[in-house]
Structure formats: C-alpha cells, structure tokens
Length: 308
Image 1 (cartoon, rainbow, N blue to C red):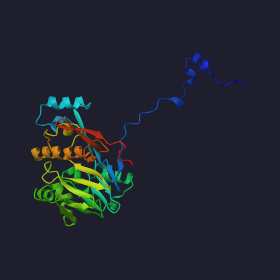
Image 2: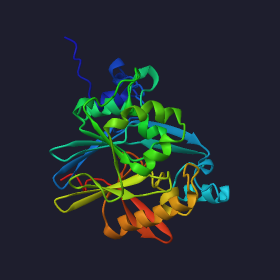
Image 3: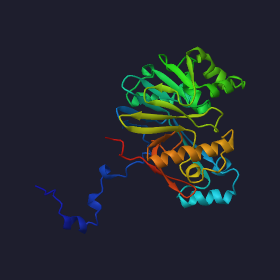
Image 4: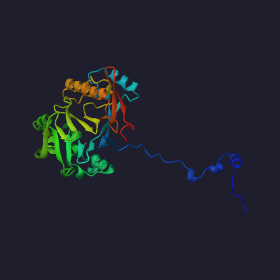
C-alpha cells in the first residue's frame, strides 16, 4: 500500500510543488462593492438613506471653487487625500419612518438604462416598496431630485403618496418653462401641498429655509424623543470643498452669495448643536457630523453612533 501522507519536511523537499492544485488556483477579481442603504434610529423614528446613483465627474474646479485659483482647489483636495482631477457624486434620497407615516425626501435621478430606478431598487433591498410611501417631499426641483417622480412609462412611481414642496420653489419652476419640471412635477400639482419655512410636514418634521442653491431650496429638521437630525439636501455638495471652504462658489448654486451664507449658517448650527445630518451628495451613506474648523467645518462620517 502506498502512503499518501505528505509531511511538512517532505513538502519542503519538493520545493512546495506538491501543494499546488487546481483548488488553490488564483481567485478571480470580483470588483469593488458599495453599501446601498443605511438605516439608523433618531428617537422613535427610523431614517434610511438610499444610494440612487453614483457619478464620476472630471475637473472638480469646474464645479467647486469656480471663483478660486485652480491650484488652490487642487491643493485642498490633495491635502485630504482626494484625487485632484476627478470628483465623485453620490445621490442619496432619504426615507423617514415616523411609525405612522413613511416620508420620502427627494426621488433621485429616475429611470436609467433599461428603465430601472436605482431608488426603487434600493428601497426594495431595504425592505420597502414604492406604494408604501405616504408623502414625497421635494427639497428643490433639480433633475436629480425630481427625476424619480414617474417611471419609464410616465406613471407615478409612488402611487399612494401625497406631495409636499416649498411654495417659493414650486412657483419659480412653474414659470420657468422647464421641460423636466413640466413632465415630472407639474402633473402632481393637485396633490401638492405648498409649505413655507417653519411649516411641518408631519409631527417632528419641519421645513428650514436654505435658499441660494435654488430660490426656494429647503432643508428639513427631524426630531423624535429628544434626538435630532438635519436633512440639508444640496446646501453643501462636497464633504471637503463645500465644508472646509463654505465661501467658495459652486457652479450649480443659482444665487452664489445666498448659498454661501446658507452653508455658513446651516452648517454652523449643525456644528454648534452637535447633531448629525444627511447630505444628499455626501459620501454614502451620506450621514455625518460637523465641527467648526477655522473659517469652515470638518466632516466626520457617522459610524455606529445612531445604530442603537
């Protein structure tokens, strides 16, 4: 009988050749992965951020710090270990479950290639369906916030929902002759409740003026059982360039001076009160904290602070 056992000494004598086998062949590369949703607790509420889409854009200076020397923008990115020639945008609508109402803030980019919606896909992965949404809140009317109002066939994505948005924002866009607004938002006018800063969407959910990015852009303050969260939408669009340099102009801000003042005021309040916030374009899962640092703010992502 042949002894098939191989001692360590024997393997070394064979130069390790005896160890090689098809079972130990090189494992194929799998590609990078991303977290697609994150659910946390704010008091008695559950807040779920959803990754609708990711987009890489070249030349960050073309968007952020457009009034600055490109070298200064590049230096700030480099100091934060970020690429100087490319930025990444994530798009993160947010669900707030109050226990009696499911509220969706913004609807994402809408149907993409193949007619699928990243938002609906991630909602389903997180355990929700589009027909469970009671209220859709539109923070403002840019395409990446209203694109998901209808599906590829033009039908309402959230078939059982009522809609809420700022009166100033709606009125401006309704007179702008914008094709996407006319297709995605105008058909819901009769179901749309117009609100002002200080008005409540639901108990514990209050609109906050954050004008500048668009004329009627609004943030939303969430409070339950003594815990607070601010949804800042597009008041700040980059976790370094917008936070550390809130005065720098941003290409997509319609009123650049007003938007800069909003950043300083809103982010200053968040930092002073030590509350978490959700930013629509912050690195996913888009939840973090701020601390005052010089003339700006330092961003720290949420890890497990809101898990319990």
